[in-house]
Image 1: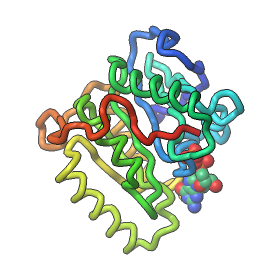
Image 2: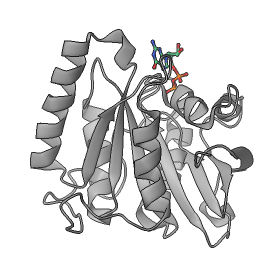
Image 3: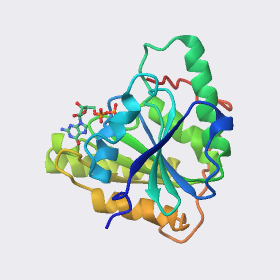
Length: 225
Ligand code: GDP
């Protein structure tokens, strides 16, 4: 049984003070709007409508918690890069996200969803830059890989890997397709290792970034859904 097999909606949070005190561990999912985050969560959980719960009106700018059992939680963060957001809710949301990502002790690692056809957009890099100082691991799912030829997919993966090795050594990356259900085992393995408390790099070192954040202490340019 996979780590996501018991996934069930748990709670929605709109203020830091409302974060659940569960004493367990969390893994958060984030990504550009439309990159395929909900599909990836649903595919991993083998649950067609699970993450779309997060897209119901009123929940799109909140942190949506899913319980995985064993005091483990998946946190679905709002998509970024979507322009139609009033400045006030954008500010509220950026503050909530910044504080959550920077201070949440229970957060074991961050899964970043990128469309394999255009990975590492500026907003994606802002997110990586900004999260890197926490020293926590990041795993990137290059999703919709079914839309690339085998050759293109391999090339993209290699290019992203080399870039990460140089700039974001705490990040690992893989190909993923919700449509074809490709990459599920690999993703599960990485996330399970975070829940198990192993957040070291494959070479055995503990990860931390070599670059300071570019954008101050908020997620600049982060435009939630
Ligand atoms: P989100 O906004 O990041 O949650 O993205 P969604 O999961 O809602 O997906 C956005 C669009 O991409 C939808 O039309 C999905 O059907 C499509 N999509 C998501 N994942 C895949 C995939 O792996 N392959 C293909 N071909 N389409 C996908």
